[in-house]
Length: 79
Image 1: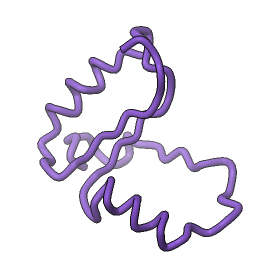
Image 2: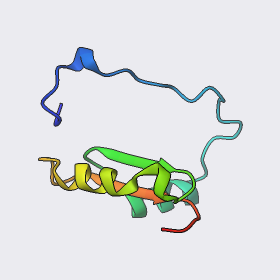
Image 3: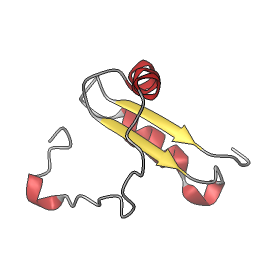
């Protein structure tokens, strides 16, 4: 892992709600335009408020050794 931690230190949390409809070719193309086709991807979704400490997430992301990683923040709020 690019974090330097052993794989046993991570837990995958799967989405509890299955997708009802397969993605359309247009949706797949839009996702590829945003995310590209390789490297780690990190998505943070929620209110953009100081309590969420997004500045820590940004500093941690900047420190990643993997230069092909991408980060996307989605939400509304103060910051």
